[in-house]
Image (cartoon, rainbow, N blue to C red; front, side):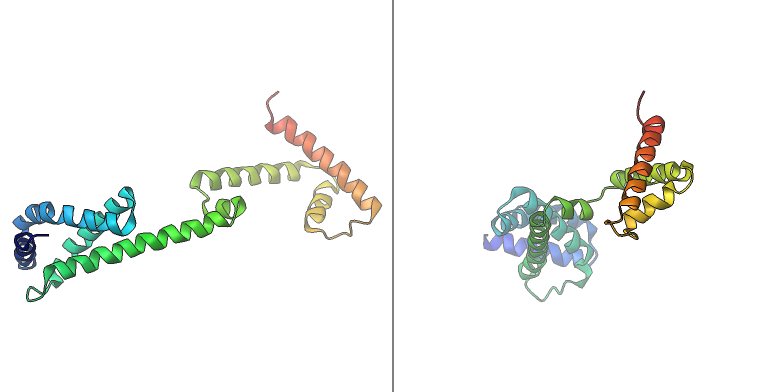
Length: 178
């Protein structure tokens, strides 16, 4: 970076700190390539670098009133962009940790609103079918799910098998295409 560019950044941030909003566009034109280049070297990924540079500029403009014009503006700018790069690295690390946990853990943490709505509809449909079963079928199925009865009890296992068969038949008639 040339001394002229450094002086220009100092001058523009001083103007912004004093409330001169006409300095926003020129400061963006000077700062964007600097922040983008720094982020690319720090992160090694163009998409992440652009995200970090963009977040840094947003924070810089939001906090420009806190800028102390007697201090080096470039140090202040680099402190902000460094924080954003560190945040993106941490986010990447967390994603890797989730990816290492396997598909079941990803599904639990990445439940989309659509996925949650489908699950809720399926649960409602199952509860509706359970309510339509006659006699002791629903309590038997629920006891089998909750494992209230010992699995060694042959009578209970046979009753559960028959109840599940009736539930499957009811499910097919109500929810599967004919």
